[in-house]
Each structure stands twice: as C-alpha cells, then as structure tokens.
Amino acid sequence: MTVIAIDGTFASGKGTLGKGLAAHYGLPYLDTGKLYRATAKRVLDAGGDVSNSSDGTNAAKRISAKDLADPILKSGPIGAAASKVSVHPDVRAALFKFQRDFAAKGGVLDGRDIGTVICPDADVKLYVTASPEERARRRHAELTGYGETLSVADVLAQLKERDTRDSTRAAAPLKPAEDAHLLDTTGMSIAEVLKAAIEMCDAILVR
Image (cartoon, rainbow, N blue to C red; front, side, top):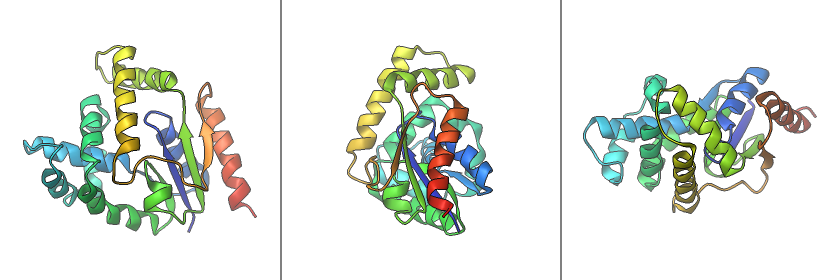
C-alpha cells in the first residue's frame, strides 16, 4: 500500500498536486485541511467559538466523510476559522484516527503535518511551497471565483498571518519532514508541478 504525504504552505498548490498524483498512481486522495474546515463549520453552525478548545474538540469528534463534500468549506471565512480551530491539540488528536485509518489503506494525503505526524513512515514525502505573493494571487483568484470580494493585498495579509499561526502553533507546527523532498511551485504551471512531483515519486517508488 503506497502512501504519499504532501505538506506545505497555504495556497502553494498542494491540493491540486495531491489530486493529480492520486489520479496518476490510482490512489485515493484526502485533503486533510477539509477535516479542520468541516470542524470549524460545525463549531460556527452551533454558535460556538473556534478559539475554544472544547467547542472544537466536540465538533471534531463528530466529523464524517460526508462533511467534507460541502463546497462552502473552500470559502475564505471558513478557511480562517479552520486555521484557528486547528491550533488546539485536542482537536488534532480527535482527527488523528480519521487520517490514520484513511492512510492505512494507501493513498495521497495533503495537509500541514502529514509527513511529520500523521504518516511519518510514508513512502514519499513532499513539501510544497511558493512565494507569498504568488500564493496570494492564486488564493485571490480562487476566492473571487467563488464570488468573494477582497483585494490581493488583503489576501496576502491574511496568508502571512496564517503562515505564522501554522508554523508557530504548539501542536504539530507546519514544517518539512527531515526526509521530505522540497518543491517550490513559484512560476510553475500545474502541469509542470505535477511532472516534477511524479519524477520525485518515481525515483523512490520505482525501484
């Protein structure tokens, strides 16, 4: 059972890459960020506080696969709320089993702590990033496509705030696994990123 772990910064393209690699290798795919987005949505829908660990943990314990299909999970407000709820160790612990159970059958998982915490023994570990400015442009295009109205400067400010929160949280901070292969997608097309990643994976998997 092959497991490919993809970690990286927000809006670096790891989700698109994850789907591409899953299709290429015939593996199931899990966007683990959606688990935290779905948790945040549950908290907000219940009138709770995403900064409250108990509210987040109670919501996380009720997450199922069907929660991940809601298109609102890709919205800006839910994304910001997810970044706040994900800092709680008890929330991360509650979602740990869901991710481990998925990986046990083989697959491609992307997130912030896949190679370091969730799947430390993954067959391939990739760490994907891009410049803040490029990531802000990508996220701005995505959000405006959903009908949200905000400037690239606003997105960049939010992105930098999220980077800081993700990389400095006490529980499973964002960082490359020691044996991760780094992939900077700045200036690269989707096809170029996928090609580079497949070459990295093949160098490890095809032996």
